[in-house]
Every structure is written in C-alpha cells, then in structure tokens.
Amino acid sequence: MSHAPTRPLIAPSLLAADFAYLADEAAAVERAGADWLHLDIMDGHFVPNITFGPLVVKALRRHTSLPLDAHLMIAPADPYIAAFAEAGADHISVHPESGPHLHRTLQLIRSLGKKSGVVLNPATPIEAVAHVLDITDIIMVMTVNPGFGGQAFLASQLEKIAALRRLIDAAGHNIIIQVDGGITPKTAPAVLAAGATCLIAGTAVYGAPDYAAAITALRPALPQAPQLAAGGG
Ligand code: DX5
Ligand code: ZN
Image (cartoon, rainbow, N blue to C red; front, side, top):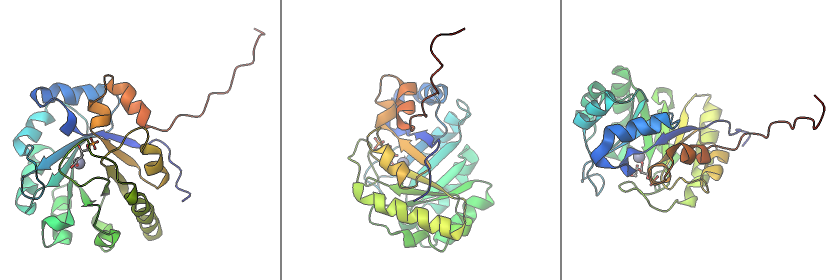
C-alpha cells in the first residue's frame, strides 16, 4: 500500500509495431525513452495466435541495446528456452500452465544467465508463484487474456496486483511486478498504485503518432518545479 510509484519501467510491446520494419520500430522506441523491449512469442497452440521465434529475436538483438524481455506464450516452453537465451533475450518469462515443472523451468532460465519471469493469466492465482519467489526475477500480471494486442484492460486484476505486492514485500524479495494488457495513460495510474513497477504497452505506444510522448504519458507526472520568484534580477 505504501509502495510509492516513482519512475516505472516502460516496456513497449513490439506486437503492435509494423512487422515489416521491426528493426526500425525497436530503435524508435529506444530513442523515445523505453526501458525494455517486450517480445511476445506466440505458438498458435498455447494461445490462438502466432508471432515469431528465436531467429527474429536474434536479428533484433543487433538493432537495439534495450534489454529484450521475452514473453513466451508457447507450450512446451522448456525445449526452446536455450534458443531464446542464445538469440539474445535478457529476460525469459513463462506461464505456469505451459509445462509441468515451473521450478525447473525457472532454474533453467537462471542457469543460462538470464532473468527469470512467471506470467499469471487472469484466472491464475498468485499462489502459483508463492513457492518460487527465491528463483524469480519478474512476475507479470496479465490484464487481458494472452494472444492479442488491443484488448480491454481487466480491472478485476488490480486486487491481484496489490496482493502480489504484499506477498513479495512480506517475503522480502526484490521482484519486478510487470503488468501486460490494455495499459494506457488511463489505466496506468491504478496499476502503479497497486504496486506494479513495470508497464508493458503495445497499442498505447506503437499505435500513437509520437512514441516519446506516448511513453511519457504512461509515467506519473513529475512534481511541479518550484515557481521562480517573479520580478527581481
Ligand atoms: C498479449 C501480449 C501483450 C500485448 C499487449 O498477449 O502479451 O504484450 O502486446 O498489447 P496492448 O498493450 O495493446 O494491450
Ligand atoms: Zn506480452
């Protein structure tokens, strides 16, 4: 509750970019002030959509120095984790439902020198991560059902974000809470107030005419600078 939203990390999701110009689109959000680049990996099996795999991640790696934040919506995930690590993903996040041994999967990601993440679908309770906090760097709360950009934000997940914040703080772990789906300047403040520290935004950034302005609009307004005394000098 006392978690003060300071400067959240902003991770534009390339899913909403122009796929014919991926390198340019990655570089553009880097120039615009993004912190991470979010990569949605979909297999048409775990989720009803298909995007891209390690080859595209590897190609992108040469065009941006942003941390590459890979969100794996594939099942099984384990056989492909080394390939995403080798391709240059810096963070690799998986859904608990994508395999039988979440703990082992997180161990594998960490063993490859990458940050490990767990993604909670709207119906997945926070208990899914309660016993893996010690090997988790990032927990992503989905505020839409995974598979598509441009969906409406599920306000039902705000209480889950707050409960997750309490769980992490009580356990004393330094875990980033990411929120993914329907993030806009309207929904971001409640998400940050609930305790998130990283916002993923596809449509709200790549669908905007000015990426830098769109990223700034997701961050809390800075306190007003003190007014200079009028006159004098
Ligand atoms: C959905 C993806 C999201 C998606 C968000 O499965 O995980 O990252 O790009 O898109 P917006 O921000 O448009 O809801
Ligand atoms: Zn995502």
